[in-house]
Amino acid sequence: MPHPTDSDPAMKDGPAEFFPPGNNDPNIVDTTVQPQVLDWMYANKWQDAHVEWHAIRACNFGGAGSKVNICRFEQLVPQDQNCQSAGDGYQFLVFHRHMIQALKQLWPNHSEQFEGFSKFPTKAEDVPPQWRSAWKNWDAEALAAGKIGDEIEKPENLARFKDEGELGFWLQCNVGQKLAGASNMPWVGLHFVLHAKWARPGNTTHGVNNTSANIDNYMFWKLHGWIDNVWEKYRRAKGMSPTDKKLKDDLIAQCREMDTEIKIIKDNLKPEDVRDPNAPLPDESGYFHEKVRPIFESATNLCSGCHAESGPNAGLSLGGHLSSREIVDGLVNVPSRDGGQFKLVVPGDPDHSWLYLKAAGKAAAAGCQQTSTAQCIDGVMPPSTGGPTVSPAQLEILRKWIADGAEGPP
Image (cartoon, rainbow, N blue to C red; front, top):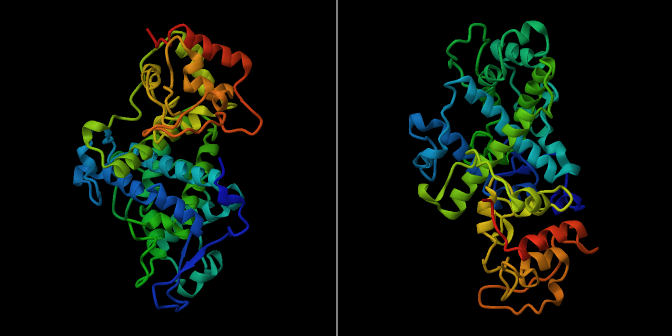
């Protein structure tokens, strides 16, 4: 859902300016995304998680840059390591698209901040005014590579990359790196020279080359958005669509990985506390799995949007990459966090089950009494001024499940 600041008149478009303390020299100004975006990123540990995403792909070289020794979490370490395979090139593309799409969803009225260059910038007029005085022309190799990116849909350029992974390697990796088995790949290094282009000596707090905080930088999203545009043109020229199931599944997998890294950082987790968020779920059946769970995960009710497997509101998970057994175990006879003396689900007693009372809009009249561990928040869920969004037929399914004993999958 859009962030509340998206509709705030104080929210601006374009880059925000950042000067080092005590120095307002226009030649040293750096550009960041707007303050509201920065605040959200820091609150949600995006800068740190971006570091760990890259670090866990460098475990074959010690996990360089990790602040939590991320390589201890062996169950999360991908087989594809940084710039060692086409698989890593593909994951690089998918991960950064996941971030771009998430930010555009949060700030749809201000998505310009996350749009890439429409073409490879070849002159000062192609970049924001704050950067024009520092413009220097590209060398011939970078310029030629940028032209290939802009014209990736041409047959001779498509032929250079047999798949998205090879393209991702070319777009991501550093000067001098080579992909084993790739025979027709042009000069490699665009990602790094684009980063270096907008590095400000003496003003690096939010610098595009500050690996701990580079996603703060407005130019980070310009260059990564351009990379994403090149990738999308390649996909379309190859007959692929942004809505292809494989791509959607891969974007969700990258989202889950980043959420797991955020949780490791926020909660100072140990390896034994973490599981692979993309491990296959078991095959399940039964009334809860087939009838009840779909109510929570429907696009109308939005329950699992706020109560997913990662960072769930009120500690309550109702969907996401969890087995139905895990969801049931987190409900049955579990004390609520916002329902006073009530438990979430009491087998055989829907009228004393806080989950049912909230969904049915009956919580306000249920006699909730605050305890030392739970307050009373008795509004309908999902939040609505118009009453329950869960339909009468769906409420009857939920009530029947609880009344019949709240059993999980067999």
